[in-house]
Image (tube, rainbow, N blue to C red; front, side, top):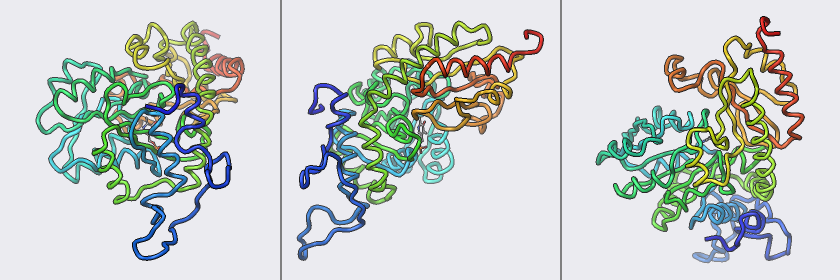
Length: 389
Ligand SMILES: *Cc1c(COP(=O)(O)O)cnc(C)c1O
């Protein structure tokens, strides 16, 4: 659906390319809330920046083109994008979410939308046969992620979308971990794609933003109305930063993934490592499905050290790789899902779904991979039980 044959080029020239008025190669930052009207009922097409702003519009056109949709929408955060999409539903509607959906998506459904009469249920979306049977008349959408946090669980997106279509309901995909450079859910049959653009799309850990893209014109009109009505829009400066980040998405991700593939193999062969979760390894759950629907395994890796390794020492002994929430920036980050991203889940449930106290999540950056491996190696050595030293 893009005007370009190759996404690498669309990343740089897609949407609105530069400024027609001056020839500036970058879209200007229209830092304005309002627009002068020549007379009553005579405007330039721009009236008020919650409704529309040229810098934000350029970003929205760009993400729509990259995802192969008809309309894009930019929000103040990934959660603002998700919440606005969820606002399309009505009292009495139910949404099925996958069991490993982003914690914030679960929280907003459980603590906010539930109070407005929009309910949810949690299902294992990797099991299509069972998912199909769970769709009662009140279910109006399936909300999935692939690969999903923190075990990089792969869901068959085309399979899920086909089930939704059969029942006349919507498929919503959170494509944060892959981005349109690696995976395009609308082309696989999904209706709505949401992003935390805070992650790979921005790519430099310097902004918080969200995006949504739809294919259907009617859905686009409803989402445009809801975006303006609820108002969680992205500002002009952050829109500019995000356009700037997206230009280098291709080269960044090529390096992210190259590094991740090397590190996944390094971890897989390390005697200290019990499990490696990375969709790019042929031994991974959903490897074949991921290969079919995405360009590669992405750059998020989770792994588990054997019992006895001192996880606190491991984190303390990393020098290059920072312990931090978030992911997708040029710098490598690690986190401890059990006490950070998934701390709100009771321990017994956590352990059952594989989020053990020894689990480590790594967002592989674009540093020289040898330096990353040196850092990981030193931290593993420092964490080794005394008996093995
Ligand atoms: C971070 C994240 C979100 C939420 O995005 P924010 O920009 O932090 O609001 C949603 N989904 C996934 C998969 C994420 O990683």
